[in-house]
Image (tube, rainbow, N blue to C red; front, top):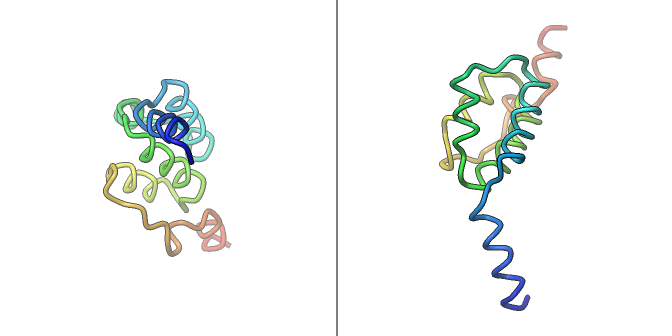
Length: 96
């Protein structure tokens, strides 16, 4: 990799756009329903693209709302995605 492309990649991680945050909000809303103002503000306050990317994965894979919120509250300190908490079908199988 040449230095010019390396710099472009690093710059991408310095900036999180409003549109990217709104995409996450849309995904979370589709999965879990209405979002509180507190959750909305927390997502809109994300400045680290790695955290935003991780939360996209969490939003898709979390078994339920509580798992997503717990991971949102971890900020950039967590990335485990293991166990039933990250099986989006776990709750459905449990209810059957």
